[in-house]
Length: 93
Image (cartoon, rainbow, N blue to C red; front, side, top):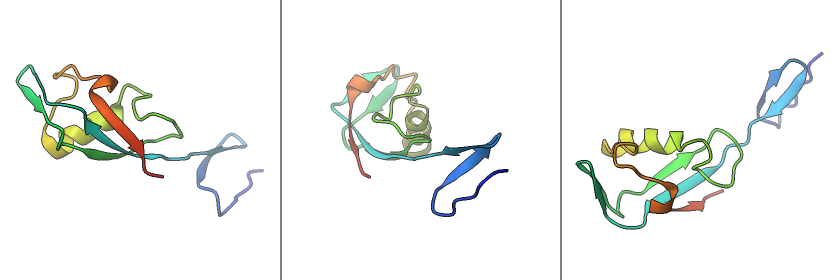
């Protein structure tokens, strides 16, 4: 039997409660970067909510970051050969 705890957010998985703890980060580029026709500037900051509890937003290949940059700025993170070293981030929680 599965227990429901209303004050916890989560989803049930085969009689175990998996609690999903999202984290919110503000990500800002450190400097201007020009690569493969893509331009990244320090004023292109984004706010990202990760799908799991983590200390860094780059934990899963930066999937959420790639999606947010494409959605907001039409900037292709992968095409510009970006890495975690190109950004500063701060936890907003």
